Length: 148
View 1 (cartoon, rainbow, N blue to C red):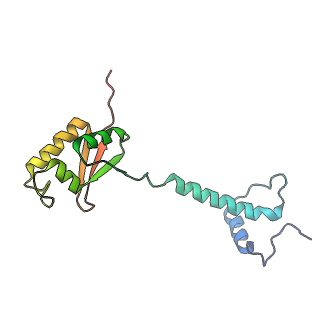
View 2: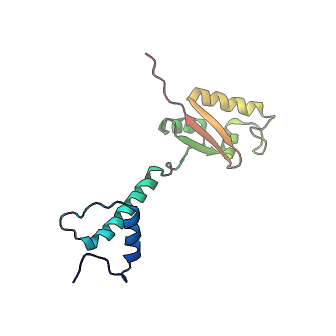
View 3: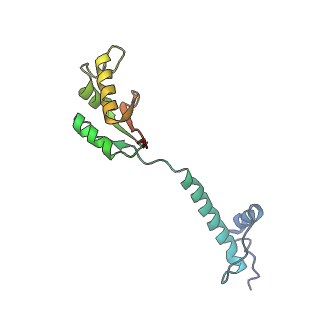
């Protein structure tokens, strides 16, 4: 005969008692007896944990932009949502904007490369940021400002 308690040798017995001690459980719903309540409580706890981690989910993967030419890169910016970064490799950026070799592109002495990149970014309405450790150049499309 089932008196509504979890059997002590049950797999969920110790877990159910701890869940009961730390969480206020809703009363059983229609068609649910006291013996299924610990399982429902554990499932509810797992759902809450999933929801908690879902709120702090990782942002979507950063978009790889087409760095084969300036025209393709500018077209890639149009496909990039506002405030979402995209990237090209430093090697692609050097080939597009700098007369220097890859190792020296955008360095202290590469004023031409930095000026070319700044002019292109300004004309395209994007901001850029170097990440040499990652070997990437990130672009971020500026939010459109509405003027009245």
